[in-house]
Length: 221
View 1 (cartoon, rainbow, N blue to C red):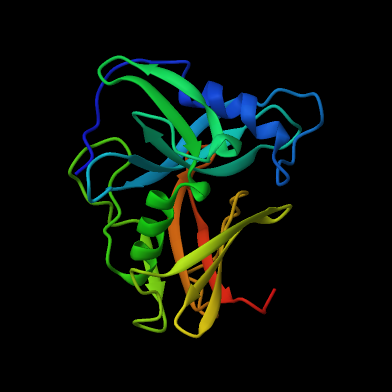
View 2 (cartoon, rainbow, N blue to C red):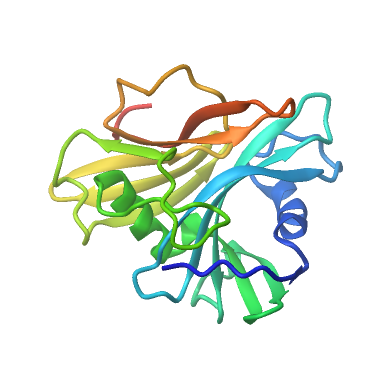
């Protein structure tokens, strides 16, 4: 169970994201423009071992002509993750836990394992800011029970349209697209093998809903 501490982070998560975001291949902002981010939604997953914080954050950049909402899967660790320097956003000082290492979570095996468990129905989404509270607004689905086994292996590929987890499970390969730019969808998706769908808040205060992750056959676009 994740414990949500009401304390300070220096620098904040959004400050770390603002510095990291412009270098990413899926960033849509103008070169040289510093993002102006605000947190607008998301959810958490529990690490079964209780060691790694796992958050799927929706953050809107209001620095351009039109706001863009990004999806940032993040992990928070009490020590550096081995061989993951390329995925490190930075460190922050937590008012209770001390120094925390913040990572782009798609490169952290704990987050990926729990994301696949969520898609397969083995993990329960948790509220972003309240500990020990499931979030029923986050929905997940997988059409082929058993194909996302707990011992699945994967590789990670970042690109202009998002981050692909190429997941080997049994004798087939799936592509889990982690959407990095969130766009509202009309209704729950019907044509995908699997998905994770959640809400975020628009600038006018209304709620949008869309795909945070989508599962395809590896050979499809």
